[in-house]
Amino acid sequence: MQSESQGQAPLSPIKAARIGVIIPALNEEAAIGGVVRAMLAAGAGQIAQCLVVDNGSTDFTASRAFGAGAQVISEPMRGYGAACLAGMAALATDVDIVVFVDGDGSDAPEDFASIVSPILAGQADLVIGSRILGQMEKGAMTAPQRFGNWLAPALIRALWGVHFTDLGPFRAISRSGLERLAMRDRDFGWTVEMQIKAARLGLRCLERPVQYRRRIGQSKISGTLRGVVRAGGKILYVVLREALHKKASIRPAAIPAPALLAAK
Image 1: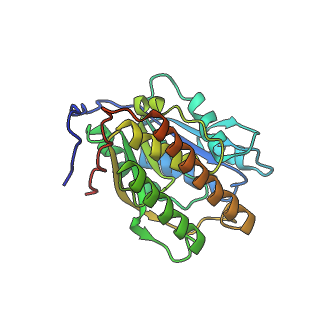
Image 2: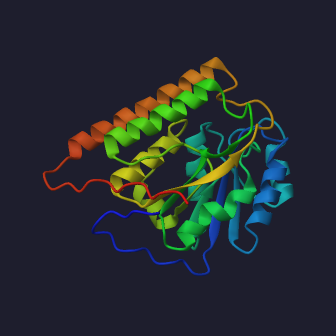
């Protein structure tokens, strides 16, 4: 069952949509070729651009991505958000839907259709692939990751009234919706910033269950204590920053954010 906020006109289905895929990658030579090939196969006939953003790799990530059929963009300034922003800047002007997916092999490209179909059908502006609602391979997410992944959505629900279960990296958003968000975070706060701004601006949000596997290679975040602390701290910082923005922009006639559309 789905719910819509009052006063919002239904979205129109997108016909003959052109989809752009952005894959941030840092030293993912073992996984990136397979990810690119699988994504192109899953989105055959729909993916107009497959962009791998090489985020300062010191291995063969760029050449293997190119060999698999991706357009490779260089963003030497490291940071997950920085790579995503570079990918956005390289999108063709006629791309209608943007898909973000990790390059480490943890996301399942076969979930591509489930992620993009609600936007194609005019049911949502933003679709998050929820690992919590889906199937997660044992060991794919560490205990600190699980805690942070619970805490941030809980804070979003308390502050903005939208119930997410996950900050999953596999997600799709309409090009028009993405442009409205004016994304700016350049590292670990990217996913939570997108979801908070979508809630605040009243974008229709939907979650779909996805598979999640153990990544290929060592994580740059969860693989080290420093990475976990930095990521967790940045996520909480972004929540606080956006909460202060909310407080500063409150008006007497403010319209509450819509409830999250229920996952099917």
